[in-house]
Length: 498
Image (cartoon, rainbow, N blue to C red):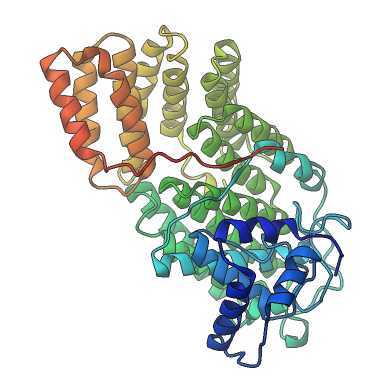
């Protein structure tokens, strides 16, 4: 017991709208349903949790996390509740720093536990049909500040870590939703192949249809990581976890679950670093940056990109560096910094061309080819065109180049190219060409489950307004209105800036 109020629990308790007596009764009922009928929580104990900082013993933290997750319609983890490591009353988890153990970055032994717990809660939301609400999207500085030194340092030595086949040394977090067991190279190879299958599906159809499958697979990998395997297998398992976490984050972003997506990107960065893959950690953070630009927060994106680029290390391949540069350029374009954007895109092109492919590229970079380079250039110039209309012509050229280079199976990227091209044409006062490319985008949109395509389509729809007197464009506007799903009542993603 700390003697100080648990502000995290207090805030969530206020959002939930329960009385202390109601929460105590629900804890008892939920615990009994989970096989713990002996639990007898009362109002005074709930008061001590909230007002005195007492951390309850197992299974109460997990029970509370499940109750708040269902009540609030978003993932609430034990960490979010401000409790200590399960089973130790009054002590915080062994994560973060000595004085702030729940903060980023997590200690090495905590990553698998956070991964397992968060995916388990996410799956529960899927099963119950709940939606994310009231969750806060952290500012870029809230991530980059505490993670800077950690990402630039070497991963903690694994000497003395629990060994495979020693069940006494398995992390107990692994037993929450998956009975931990050591795996061999064949199982890991199958997991690595599943990542490729999920990645191809996402590129073709969007994140909506396979997100739950990816989260479920990631949850099981978290259980496997409760054991420490031989180093070469452990690194591969961490790689699988990082790749699945990035996919889970990207798919969550693709369907509008923004705070959940951000959490997965942070989990991915931790997993990649645990596996000694700093470039992968940087790429995971670059996904969070792309998310921030999409949400209209380019300043936060630039914060994240500084960390992603510097934390990736010298082993980053030129093509990976080129990809990171394109994201930074997009953020600069969103801020109207045309000169900086052009300089950054020029550096990206030089880096891309300098990559001779002398060594094997990591699997997660296979999706970034010349078509993606041109597509990102088109997006950056189209974004800059909102500030400087002369950029629209250049955006058109890059979008056409991207479309010529696109291969089959990249349907969502093609849609984005068409939307960039149509938007650039509208800005350049060429409604006839814009109408043509907009309709090509509409033809393909029914084949994906990507909310991001709808968001981009809404941006393009805004640009059609000044041409509404044109009969053809008015017809296009009506078709777009029929194609777009009805938006729920306007809501803003909460912002936790520090």
